[in-house]
Amino acid sequence: MDKKTEEFYLRLKEELINSTVWPSEYLFKFIVPTDVDKVRIIETSFDGMGAVIETHQSKTGKYTSVSINVTMKNAQSVVDKYIELTNIEGIISL
Image: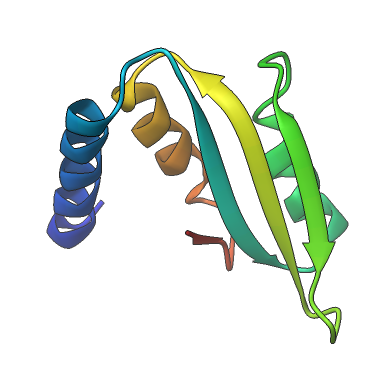
């Protein structure tokens, strides 16, 4: 992970610690090129967590947005989940 990305995650963690009482519900939002396997990888990473997952394709069908509402135990678990999913080619975390 490069220094800029590392700094981003440190800032995110700090903001989450200062603005949220944990455990708390968190809304993850991702955009990926439309590919059943990529969406499945995202969905599978939240298995067993009681997550509510919604997907929507763009008008052109090129991209799929994935929204996941799930209770997370702390700020670090949120950061860890983002890092876990960064290996999906073309994923954008919002």
